[in-house]
Length: 148
Image 1: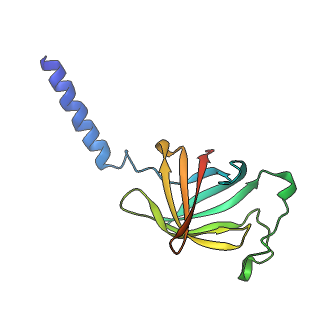
Image 2: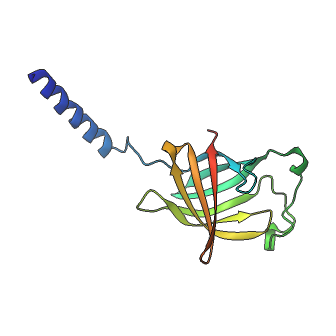
Image 3: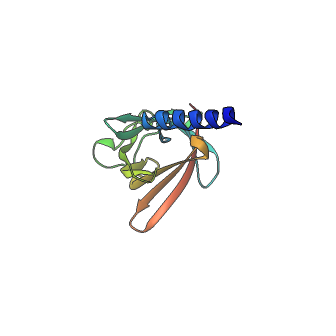
């Protein structure tokens, strides 16, 4: 019985040390994601989310429909107007919040040219990402799947 108590104490101590060193870090949206159309439930593209100085951005890395490979953002404004969607940065300025949610950034929907305030919430142990875009009180949700 004494061995079990010592083992339990050592396990607790080891977990405390690892947690204090960030080994059990929060799940982040960083990685490659398969985007899923919320209307058709079909895969559309791969978006790679990266982090620089604590801020996330995301770029369209692959368009899955071969007939859309050369699509441009005809409804976008400013410097993105008529630019190729493939390679376009569609997520900008996203930062970690206290509750495991990532927000304060924006996401562009290149099919309609609209920019939404963005909230990203990793789910299912980081295998799924809830992508919520807001305009005022209205929002759209998509669920992206982790590729890598």
